[in-house]
Length: 326
Image (cartoon, rainbow, N blue to C red):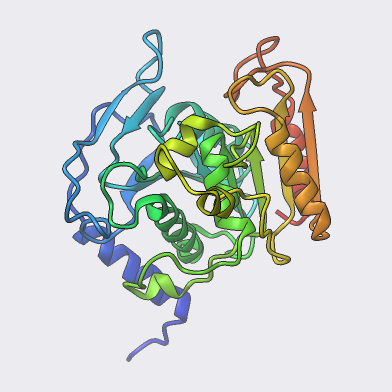
């Protein structure tokens, strides 16, 4: 007897087959306990015909522990999954896609991936940390290579909902620093596909229920730009049109989901005016938004303990998420 197969089951099955067909992952450091990693593209990532860089994982700081790693020259984009049950928590039927920062030169997978995933898995969320390609490594898509990975990752998180037992319509996207720029690019612009669909997973909409931009890079022009991120993304001499085109306080879509913002006022790397500009743009479009500006914390505070960083932000986000159905 042939059993009926619904569309989501078909998509999940296609994804599983693609994952099995993907190349083995090089692993510099062992994954922390409870985490599971898999590539997001079947075979090689698109547009890599002229890519010659070698992917490398190193410690974020000399004193870092092995699970505080960063990746540079990413060749194999991945998602790293942490389930609530793996931290002894009860699932709440929702998921979060985490996009770590790193100035578009590296990806801080430990500090803004594993650590954040543990915090929100304890609150019941199935968490996925994205390792994405970097724009200056020779990919055909150039600046849009990270966006291709982010779109593919969000579609995968949606496609895996039946298998992982959460609601595909209850998925949040959270990005940090340059990862905040990528998260805003993914969620605040009209969802125009950045790559040619390759399988059933790509039938999933590029859609999230809520978004969070934590000390985000937003502007690519003006006095408050993070020049490092802009140079990596657009090169040393971008045109005014290119800078404005990737300033994410411009062209905010009316379909943007509710947005949570958090920034420290003493951030010297990415000035808080980036979050304020995004807040103004969201308000102008009538998008539900909440913005927290902390007295101190600097840049990249993540979950660092006080007084160095404003640790209440995860609780503030959870309250916001619950109010908006996540």
